[in-house]
Amino acid sequence: MEVIFLGTGTSQGVPMIACKCAVCTSTDPRNHRTRASIHVVMDGLHIQVDAAPEFRLQCLRERILWVDRFILTHGHADHITGMDDLRRFCDLLGGTALPVYSTAEGLARVKAVFPYAIADQPAAKGYAAFRLSPMPAKLDLPQGTIESVPLPHGGVETLGLVFTERSSGKKFAYYTDCKTVPPPAVALARGATAVVLDGLRIHPHPTHMTIGEAVAVAREIASPRSLLTHLTHLNDHAALAAALPPGMEPAYDGLRLTL
Image (cartoon, rainbow, N blue to C red; front, side, top):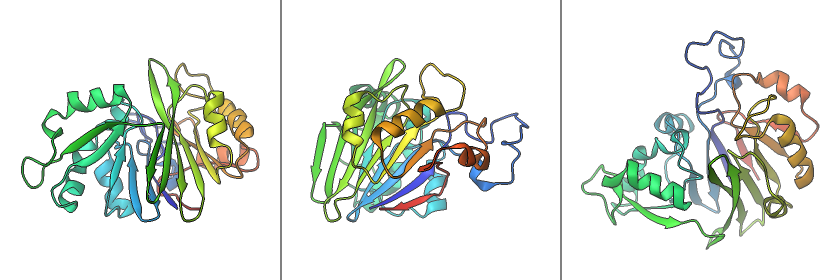
């Protein structure tokens, strides 16, 4: 299994507009964060999770050449607004609709923002087409399984995702945009080779975990490798990496994990 971090930043991105702080003006490329999303390759199956406003640029930067399925964790703007650029992958699929999975809230948002794309096939070459389905608790595929669990995120629920590759048995958990990780989600992630957790900043936030809260969850899950995503400009990569306990690290745009 391969996991590519297309983006690891918040809804404002880093550098942030009109900010001259040390992180926003840093020359360390790990401090340049586009909005959070990942690309997972599981036994050759390409799964894209979320589509940030920079999705097109992220795909070009990381040479993403194929998408078989798309999962939207929730319908917030920083996760959905790049979905129109999935049209290229509909072309590559031969003009068939791309399977899209999400929560009821996420699917309603897709219908509202992209009504022209809800179809069994594109209206014409170069157009997007999405075949919408509720994300099940367990999506069983020839290449492995993708399990989902609800995570609280303010007024909505986010999909926590756990991927298990059939050939290798490797397990990977992705829990972005959440205020807590409830016991069922902790249990589901146990045994994962790597776990990604929302870790917005040190200071409290009403809908995201702080770095301290993410560290506590990582200890509960006890994965050998835990990574933080959805990081604000208050986090310098090198300083945060040095401050985290063993087995934990901040993710960065372009990071690739081979599990």
